[in-house]
Image (cartoon, rainbow, N blue to C red; front, side, top):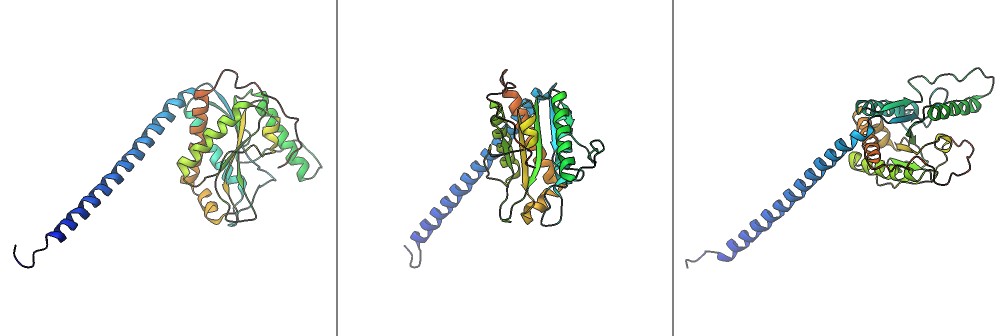
Length: 265
């Protein structure tokens, strides 16, 4: 062997090349798996969406009118943001063949003539929404809200349900899974720690989706982004489609109704 040749260095270089190639191959396998999982998930949603045809779905955009809801750190109000998501959700559901009942549009209708204060008028509006939903015999109700908290680090969309209807928990779980998958912004879990007037007084399964925290600067910016609003709306849509596809015949029967409680928000 000639002086200066280094077979050991060549061997080490070869092993490094093999390790790098193996690492790259593993990355490609993972990415391919993620891509396949996403495609299969979307195919599943598309298939499940057929179950939406002929359904009546009440979409309740929280607050409105004299009640702007939470105010974000950037000054944005909850009212128009949750309405924007609700309208996007309604269009998706209608495209799938569902009948959508929106409890409010751009302007909250006045509920009669009253000399009472804002709190009383808000209660009247909530009662009107409940009456509309129950009169329509909706299959399900989705109430859309945005969250706020004293700690600005709190973030993430979260889906709430009540135990009045057993199937509400299943719906909450499916919606929350889709929110986590499609937004990548939440690790929150579903919860039944809620006291919302609409869920407490409607005669069908339902969930409240808190789409994010306006008290979190980054999330407040996201919630104002139309593209992000579309993703949130689609996540709710996908959860609804999957839920209807799995819905048992007895899903609209209440399990053990709780006493109706006073208005909390």
